[in-house]
Length: 335
Ligand code: NAD
Ligand code: TDX
Image (cartoon, rainbow, N blue to C red; front, side, top):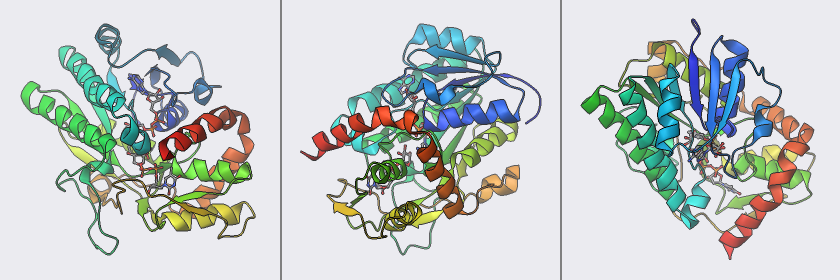
């Protein structure tokens, strides 16, 4: 990326945010301030070993208007990752999703408007609802919003706030909607890390429903390179879909994990389905590729998954402290 700037990265201690911070410090000259509330999903260990002269970490809430105002005023670009991110949690306790995803985003864009700062909003393909398994269509920038869950409806609400602030107040913002990410530092509540760490602990993977649901997987580093491309050259007011043509059904992903870890491919349990479970997501990222020249580096999912499995194998001290609590939450949700 060109030049040097001061980035304020919200949610930078979470999965995708921390991968972005690593990526930025490795590949650009920017300095980074992370604003993160360190909820159950935030982890200081995900930011260890980074150059302290280019990284500042602030423990605070994006809903804290005074804190947000002073931080936004002191930076060039706000990159907004912070969110409550897990669908299963949103089905059992939606309130934090409204507070963080909706009111938190509102608080940030008000500050960005006041100080006329460049704002990039990170969102998800889940705002478009889901597709049938046999539908040849994929999501594009013009697909109508149709979210299914408390999580995705609050992300949709936040996207619409950003669009309205662009139109009504001239906020200098862009939005990206990305497909499912995988890679290091992903919380063990999420599908891929949950199944890897289950197997590493001698437990069986848990597949919801029939395991036929399809997700469109992208490596977190490819998400990061796309966000940097949009910050550099994206058109103000525009939305960009980010995806790497990685459609896989959940059963195939579990089978790959089991094979990788030397287990029989059918050594998993089918468990109760997620209520309202979206069937399939699929991204058409033609706009990003043709207008901004972006390309994913990880084109082979099986290879990226193997690297991710190796990371969880080699970093037990990162995930073991979260594992029991995450499984206890699943046990409560199931009862
Ligand atoms: P995550 O849950 O791993 O991380 C979220 C981070 O935000 C955590 O560090 C948490 O402490 C922080 N946070 C939560 N509430 C906060 C608040 N009120 N104030 C400050 N910080 C707060 O989530 P993730 O999977 O890394 O997702 C990051 C972003 O990317 C989200 O906006 C999500 O909607 C979006 N996204 C995720 C995926 C995916 O596959 N995980 C795909 C597309 C888009
Ligand atoms: O134990 C499980 N078994 C299972 O079959 C879990 C945790 C999930 N699943 C299924 C549900 C989904 O079909 O795996 C798929 C992926 O589940 P999640 O990891 O919970 O992701 P998803 O619901 O698809 O949402 C993710 O991608 C889009 C992120 O969590 C969101 O933040 C992002 O917006």
